[in-house]
Image 1 (cartoon, rainbow, N blue to C red):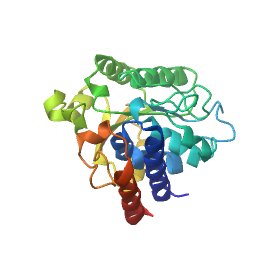
Image 2 (image 1 turned 90 degrees about the vertical axis):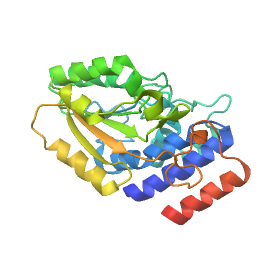
Image 3 (image 1 turned 135 degrees about the vertical axis):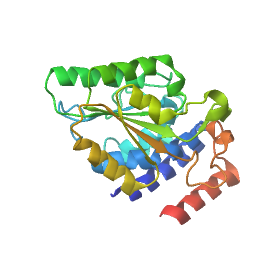
Image 4 (image 1 turned 120 degrees about the horizontal axis):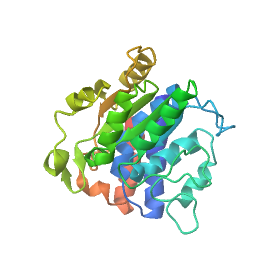
Length: 271
């Protein structure tokens, strides 16, 4: 399926999963659904029939609390049955609330405690460079990730070692914890900080599939020798009007009429 169809399926499946498991973070999943869709439909060099293929591109979701989105995109991409999604966040399920690699084909690394994904991605990229491997490592971060000191160490490391085979994508929805990012811990001037650490930086609309695809392909032709950061400006809860930019949906699961209305809106807007 194309990226827009995939984004719709990620959103619908995530709403259903968080409803059944009564789990949190649907706002975060809806925020990055378009990024995941473009990556998995058009960019990542992967094979669902051979998840451990040595030359595959690597993808890490550092903002592990949005793991329902990764589970949904993997199921839609053939890594495992969509039926398994119905068990999300329930006793005995392999699909935990925060993304886990255990027994799940296609997941490279378990995350959830913020600040780890970029460091691991740097290690993978550095090892690939030393071994003359051609695969690319992609990692999606949140603003909460960028409050962690370990990520700034990783940014320095990647810039210093010129890890051109590393692309970070920040799902920059401007909402975190219990309020706005600006009030929690202001990150601006955000682009300038990444640039000062030796990265190429691209600021785009994180819901625009054409812009995402163009930027990923532009990065693939870049010969600057620098790692790349895409600051994807997004909307928390994108696609469901009553969830958009609402901190409540960082924690709440859609139930009752809210669940029905969420699915109805997604069908009207995207199907």
